[in-house]
Image 1 (cartoon, rainbow, N blue to C red):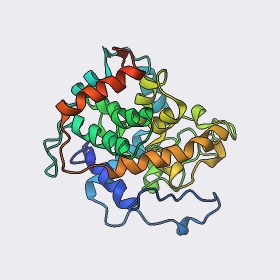
Image 2 (image 1 turned 135 degrees about the vertical axis):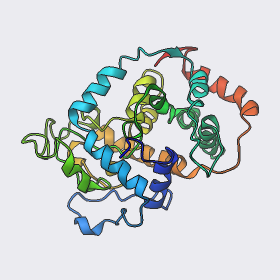
Image 3 (image 1 turned 180 degrees about the vertical axis):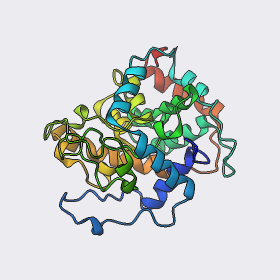
Image 4 (image 1 turned 90 degrees about the horizontal axis):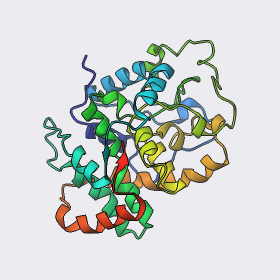
Length: 289
């Protein structure tokens, strides 16, 4: 099968909305809750989505994640401003997606405009604008499964609360004598800052933005796809006080991330002056990518 089984990157997010149909709903529960008490998210899923998770769960090993961090987190690919990066991402066109003709910039503006309409802080609005910019990894040859998907911890026992967790049995780390233990290579309460998550656009954009935005924003960027934690209550053995303080912000952000898309096209030219001013409040004219 192809490394890119989704019809478009948006297909993954549509699947998320089917799994979490109520904005703000959290399954963050006690770690001892029985497995059968959780909803069955795999029923009636599209074949492409199921195949996507199979490939993703096989490929996202600890060695793979470390290799991608070494490859990209030096931020030595290019220098460009935030709006310039949005235009760069606009090259990512999902020609096979029949359901929308919105550009990538318009998708970003939909999220940030919803946040703006509800009167949230300016840094929150900006977080909505940039949260998917890490998808430029696709333009550098990365397959879908290394760009999007629910993120999960690697280097420790795979959680059964990861969607399609049965595919993780095919991962090379699954039966490793260290990586298959509850703590793996980590310490209890070490904080997610010190835990390797599966590689994708979240981790990348976090590192691009980490010198410029407040901690709440950075948690939103880094963990917005970490559904096993913030919606299913997995990996709580690694939480620290900072993670627990950031959790409400991550959940609040996901209300806008999942439920802001529509067919109404934002007027990019009309909105651009506001967003260029907002960007300049937090970012220099050029940053490293």
